[in-house]
Amino acid sequence: MNKDKVKIGIYELTGCAGDALLILDCENELLDIFKAADIQSFSMAKSDNIDGNLDVVLVEGSVSTEREVEELKDIRKRSQLVVAIGLCATVGGIQARFTNPKEWEKNFKKVYGDVKMEHTPPLQSKPIDDYVKVDYYLPGCPIGKEQFLHLFTRIVKGAPPEKYPRPVCVTCKFKENDCLLNRDILCLGPLTADGCGAACISHNLPCVGCWGPVEGANLTSEYYLLKEKGFDVEYIKKKMANYSGTKIAEFFEKIKEEKK
Ligand code: SF4
Ligand code: SF4
Image (cartoon, rainbow, N blue to C red):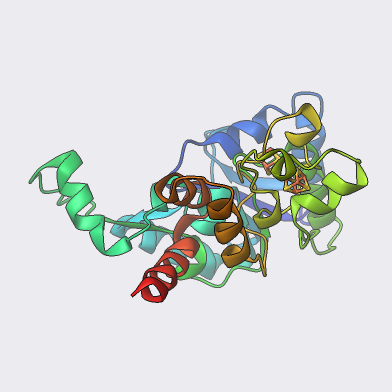
């Protein structure tokens, strides 16, 4: 243990563990990562984990059991800064993509029947900021390697991580790609935070929104534009909901109200 190094914990809640794997996949940088910080807890990478006080924690995954709520609250108490990494931690993930969240229990029963999970009762999947204060966010499904290394370098130097305030369309325009919407291809670039540098469109594929919703996205305009272009309403909803987690449900409620 080194007193001068930033003490970091990396924790996983419900998800596919893709973000933790992405960190491990930084093969050329991994030794430098472990040298640059005092990584006290990272169960995907080491077995001598310590649950003590930390400077920074990176939390992957959504909260979807009562035990995870307790675990997360304990992590928050022990750390100066909490960073949500990956789409599940930032917006709830694909497991939170209900267009009608009131149907969670019904859907749960459809999959698991009447089985009682007493050891750790399940909850509807939620992003971590539904339960604790989050200081910074690194979205992405999964997070990108380059963006993770930027974030990691900044936190070990005591600087705040970068934010991703612009939609994918901005970089897409800088790269002079032809707009796919003009070719009547469903693209979610206007609604999605740009951390990937418009990767898919630059390979002639539409954005499906894997970096999650950008702040201030004009959902109404995109919804009606896609409708005008003749896309089926249920298809639009599914596409828009896929990577938006819990944040999209209110929008669909509003659309339903407008139709009444
Ligand atoms: S192709 Fe997609 S990301 Fe690019 S400008 Fe058009 S809508 Fe935006
Ligand atoms: S789906 Fe969208 S946000 Fe995800 S990598 Fe492709 S362009 Fe980027």
